[in-house]
Image (tube, rainbow, N blue to C red; front, side, top):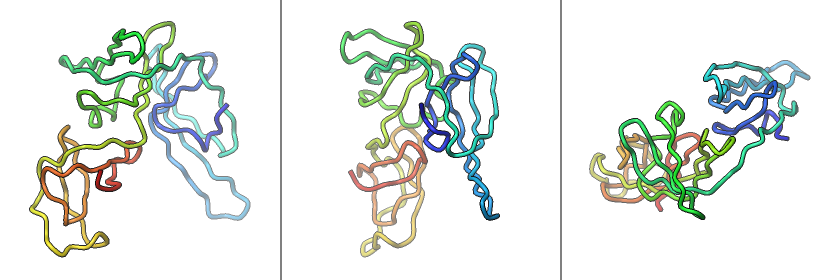
Length: 188
């Protein structure tokens, strides 16, 4: 049973016997003494599609939904449908763009390390790996002598995602991007 402070985007919890996926986690730390940190969380009901906003204290427990987790690989996109292949039995699962809200920028053909959540044999959501390696396809030229602690510049990656990177990086380099906050981590 996860605590509210442990919730991350894409996790599935059980609220009133209905599976809900975590879409947004907002942490509020009140400044008064003795006040508990509050977590405002937006859920989406996986059966009805309705949104639900709830507030929890950091040590409140939530019930984890009864889902089957399988390791999958991202295969391809067909219109607004994204197809994933089970790594053990090669069965395929398809999710729509709306089901993958905010995660499509990190998907590229052959990406492994994805966990697909199945409810009654139907794919309902995915959990991305903590970080992915992606190629810079467009950015300003690298500056010689720029240090790692200096300014940043925007860079567009192979999936269209834009991140801020150090000035010394150039097009064609592979970088590691955090899938939770969408920020540059390091060279790959």
